[in-house]
Amino acid sequence: MFYKQKRFNFEKVKEILLTLALIAFITAFASCKQEQYEKITVINGAVPVYMFTIPEGDSIGNYTKITAKYLVDDVNYRKQARVRAYGVYPSEYFEDKGDIVFLDFSLGGTDKNGPFLLSNVFGSNRNLPIVSKHAGANTWFTVEFPLDGMQHQAYNKNNFPDSNTNGDLYFALGLGTGSTSADLTYYAKEIALENNDGSKKIISKGSGFTKAAFAGYPANLPEIRRIKTGRIDIAVFDGQHDDPSGYFQVRKIYPWLFSIFDPDSVYCYLLIGEKSAILYDTAYGIGYLPGVINKLTDKPVTVVVSHGHTDHANGAYQFNEAWLYEKDFELARTAATYRPFIVEDLMEEGQVLPEGFDPEYYVNAGAGNLKELNIGQIFDLGGMTVEVIAAEGHTAGSIGLLVREKRVYLNSDSANFHTWMFLPESLSMKEYIAMLERTIQLEFDTFFVGHSDAPMTKDDYQKILNVARNATLEKAVPYTNSRAHLNPVAYQEDNVMLVFSAEKMR
Image (cartoon, rainbow, N blue to C red):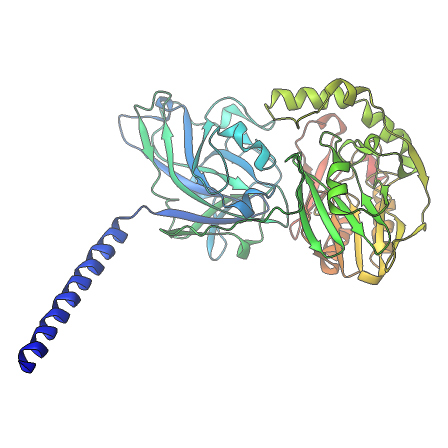
């Protein structure tokens, strides 16, 4: 009896093991059949390249759009994400960059790149529904890129292939950050060339290259990658500091420093000491910034504006007073007159305005109560002091804030990886270089700019200075943007771009 019982147990164990093996086989087989995605990480505007093979008897003229399905987790969804789709390229324009094949069209030329199809459609998670009504964090959504229409200002239709073209065509499309230093990770699947009614569809099977392929602005190549995966890793942001209205997004950089992101692609910073705080910049003035500040601190807040441009000074009217260097007073007052166009653009883009926003009040609110800021002025926040630093160049009245105790410098637009020095209010290149040479001697290890909240180093500042010193008209190329009448040109090296003009070189 004892022997039979022992044998019975052995047979049962064998049966269980066989069952487990069968389950494992079925699971493994299913995993082989599971849907595959691409996990893509980009920086500085690079987007993946996809090849579409159009068979003989068919042609590009039979297709009207490219569609793509994307998934962005909560952490990346909240970054300054943008949809980009670029042109049609012959394969000979791609270069071997080591781990990837790369096409660089940073300066906007269209002689080799084909047309810009659709660019910079949205500036943040708030604007994702402009591209897809089903967009959201941690969910697949589909975007469409028209092959004709909604073009970038640099669109050159003459570069688009003839409607009878077939064979292998390369398109670059995907999501990017709009920042030279912030990365974005997302998932992509079913990148397809389609016609309007969906009766014709060609799904891309990849880039057509043996290496990962990208196109876009010159990128920090080790920081961009694409891999096949069947697993999606979801990250969730706690959002504990965010704007109650859902308009602004807040990030705690240090215990004493917060960034506040305006979805029209600009950052403000809140510095909190033991007894008081400083708000550095006020963004466009669309969202209600005091509501965010009141959630972050109950200490008295002084508002300091970096310079008079629309995207930094236009929210000053929401506060009792705002400190600005007097040389930019007139610029800030002029910026306030642009508000009707800002509202018009937001409406045309279909952007959802914050609840309670009154366009008429906004348009007529004026520049606010501007107080004269002095260079060298010190704000004692308790436990740390903040000094006003002259940062002239981008505008005559640009200023930065130096927190010596923390060895941190905030300089908004005065020095970054894409600086405009061709505007009427910009100073000469000689004056700009002198400012950079003076500022780099200051006691800081980390600095922050106005259109990215990624910490930057003293080495980064040195790169900006090097580019300013090396820039010449002979080395520069035309820069395409809406202010072409100012004849801007761009010089770039080491991932840093400086835009200037012949007038500013005098």
